[in-house]
Amino acid sequence: MDTGQAFETQSQGFGQDVVAPLPRITLQAFCETPAIAAMMQSATADRRMDKAHARVQMGGPAAAVEAFRSAPTPNIIVLETVSDPAVLVAHLDALAQSCDAGTKVVVIGHVNDVQLYRDLIRRGVSEYLIAPLGPLDMLRTLSELYVAPGARNLGRMIAVIGAKGGVGASTVSHNVAWAIARNLDASTVIVDLDIAFGTAGLDFNQDPPQGVAEAVFSPERLDANMLDRLLSRCSDNLALLSAPAMLDKLCDLPEDAFDQLFDLLRASVPCVVLDVPHVWSAWVKRALIGADEVLIVAAPELASLRNAKNLMDLARASRPNDAVPRLVLNQVGLPKRPEIDAAEFAKALGVEVLASIPFDAQVFGTAANNGQMIAEVQSGGKINEALIQVASALTGRGEAKRGKRSLFEPLVAKLKRRRA
Image 1 (cartoon, rainbow, N blue to C red):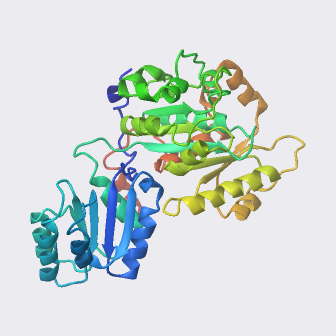
Image 2 (cartoon, one colour):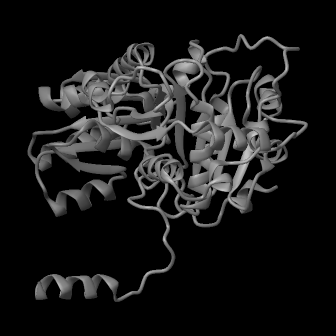
Image 3 (tube, rainbow, N blue to C red):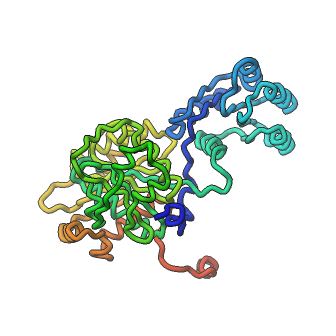
């Protein structure tokens, strides 16, 4: 299966607001105001700058000219200026005398001046930004410097983890991936990261000879062609990177064990769903922090509440420029079990419950034993509606696909409102 072709269909609407992580580059910023310096500090501490080496200092363009008179320049120089345009241009001309080939320059100014912008671009400046701006604005600009023109949109990566073992996070992740592929018509890959005990192969009734273990234990061989061979097709829009579920190898993996795999998937597929096992290690933490969306699956009981709060607190501290993780309550209404009300659960965590999935032993048990998805066992009902709702929210789609709409539908709705 060729990822370059198999995942081409219906990818629009995904990845448009995803900022690509920066490669291993060096960056130095020279600021003149505390506000921009603080913004740059926040941007350089973001998860997307994990591979980059950055330094933020004061002094503006004048300090940059002095710093690089006898020192090599980094891959990117960010300059904030509050000076007169003529002074800025003079500093840039002086800086050009010592700039290494390939160094990119981004200028942050405080004046919206078209003529200045043209002068800067003519001198080879990569981008001119106008303050004030936030960390994500800066990250997006830096990222775009390394995205080839015409390249496909970056894939959205969604990490799903259970607040505790046994809450059904794997089942939710597999069914959400199915809903994204089927109901939202988006090409998707589900990655089972539980190498020793993963169940994605069982849930999709697949028994591929190869999977995620080959990608992780042979990183020197991993490329786009190898990834094609490792993926097994579940449907037209859905592919699986399964876990071997064998104990012949220990899974004491280094922190960056999945980095190369994730980079390849992001570049190939509009949507990637990670089924993250309920363990705590450096690579699990890295996968959660590096994902574009995090979904926490919890049961409505105390242990789940405590663990979900810990995960929420970690995400807020480690991902300050991202949305907080989404929360799904699963196995709601389990007979004879006292439960924490969804409103109380949400209040304790400071987030809304994205969906509450009712407990139904017959439906979930039938699906699991037959290697089917919930939609194949029971296409209607609250469970499937909740899964589609979660899929829509995680992908940034306001609603699931509901067939073709008339081009005149917005106009008709507008006329109806006027008459009312």
